[in-house]
Every structure is written in structure tokens, then in C-alpha cells.
Length: 168
Image 1 (tube, rainbow, N blue to C red):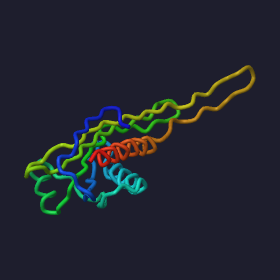
Image 2: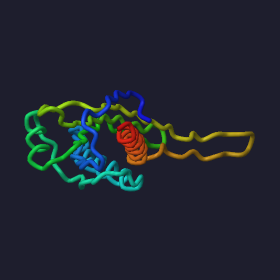
Image 3: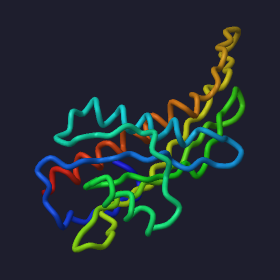
Image 4: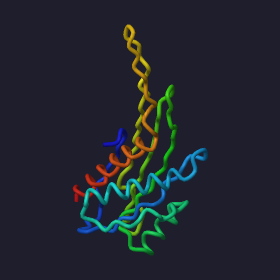
């Protein structure tokens, strides 16, 4: 599960909800990583085979809550997943890899938009240093890629969404 979690019980109990995963926002220095993060989350949800209609992760994220509400009512979405990759650093032989992501889940209740869940996931990994033991030398390895850490965050978010759907 993610490091920071806020889950509220969905007001409307949908037997088979229609869920859309919007493109996550990216840091300016790594354009396009948000789109990859949302696609990873979408694929993780598909693997979990949750009881919902999942819609592809190629929907651009609306800018305002009014636009989110309009999109959800127009397309009859029961839940909308939005997010942001707030930090993305690909490590190397001497530096750690680190990824921070946030996710918000929206639903509509009584003709108004409400937040059903929020999560923040942080993953970091260090490189394996070169070591010397008497006359034997063990070569180090670079830190795992930031993209693999992003995949771990997606798995955490998918677990949280699965938990929300199970709370009906």
C-alpha cells in the first residue's frame, strides 16, 4: 500500500463501476512520464481483474474540478483516477533512484464531486557499491531504474483502488 493514504467510503455503491484513469501530470524536467505512469496503473488494474469497467489511460486530465465533474457526468464515469508524478530521478552507479507519485480518486455523489481516496507513494533504491575483500573485488551495480520504481508505485495504487472497491 502507498505511504500516505486517505480512503473514504464511496457514497454511491456501484455494482460494476465505470472507472477512467486519466493521464498523470509530469514534472517539467521529465515530460511524458506521467502518461507512462497512468498506463502502468491501468495495466496493473487490468491484471488484478477488478470488478469494474476500466477505460484506457489516454484521457487528458481536466484542469479544474468543474471540468472533472463535467467529464464524469458527460461520459457517465463512476470514478475518475487522476495523479501526478511529483519527483523522478533515475539513479546511476553512484546515485540513488527515487520516484514520488500522488493519486486522487473522484466520484460523484448528490450531484457534486467528492474525493474518495488520496495516496502518495514513494520508492527509492540505492546502487550496489563496489566492494573489496582482501584480493577479491566485487563490482557494484547502478541503482534500479526509476521506471521500475514507478511500476512499484503503480502496484501500490492498484492495491488501494482494489481496497476501495471492496469496501462497498
